[in-house]
Length: 410
Image 1 (spheres, rainbow, N blue to C red):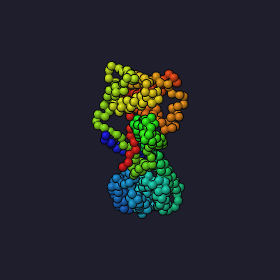
Image 2: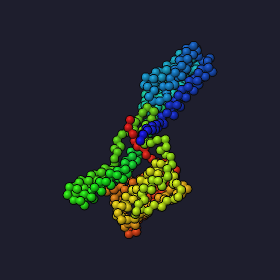
Image 3: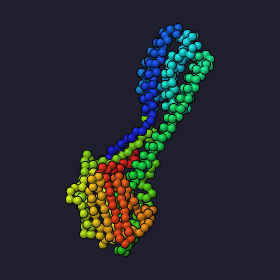
Image 4: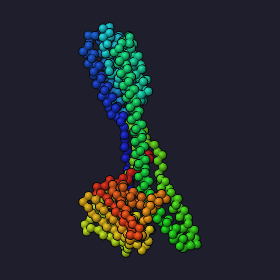
């Protein structure tokens, strides 16, 4: 059986990086437009034009750098901030005094905020404080005195960048928590699947060896005793958890990553199969099978799981009602679902016995029957009256989504 690995990448950062890239381009064009409309305010327009050429080329050339956190390195952030600071400091050297006095924009204008926001998205609110502080100082130097509009703009950049940095940190923590939860869910489902398989095979064989050994006596009795001990130990392992969920989700540059390994057979793995062909082997001298005359079609994984649940129900009949108990299997093909009922004429199940068995690690009903049906999106209803037998009704929707993934490793 082939296995394939699915990679689910979750990140709220990627939209922020895309928005930042667009912001840098738009604000660069905006800064150039402001310069063109206030060209007469500049005593040295040639220096300003040279700066805008650099700003234009730098913005376009560094677009790949603001695509994700991995590409946005510390060196790039430092150079990017330097470009903004140089533009702010150059403003009083190229613009006339009236422009400065009237609170005219600096050469990079609001493009500067993009540099600070890159720090915030990359490293959180602490990096945002680190980047916005020199920007605030440069703006005060450019103006020459702490005017009200300058202070207002400085505080706005400070608050906005710190807030965005904090939001990014919270989002990253949420991503890691969600990835961890998905891995735990995948591992739990795999544990339940293995528990069903073990219950259907290994545990039943060990229990049989224990019973037969006690009957035969001698060396066989000792073998049966050892088999009983191993059965108890294995039941404890199954009920306690087969898979340690200790692997932390990968926290990559583009968000939290969860890897899920799915079992996959071939291209026809989910092709419909006739459920009757899977249930036919269960018919025996003391097991009566009643089924429709037409094929009962279900996706192959769902049909196999439903047949396994029927087998587990029949095993419970033989184990608890005795070899002489009779059982009846009824298959009903409804328009939207398939219903399989397994009924026996045994003594029934005492009240509270199922909960006690599950607490002892005996997961025949909890995992081999109800667990399978739950994973198929169906249900398993068990009705038992002491002295009147037991009836198990298994219902499976025809449109099923079998959950078979498990947490994988690289």
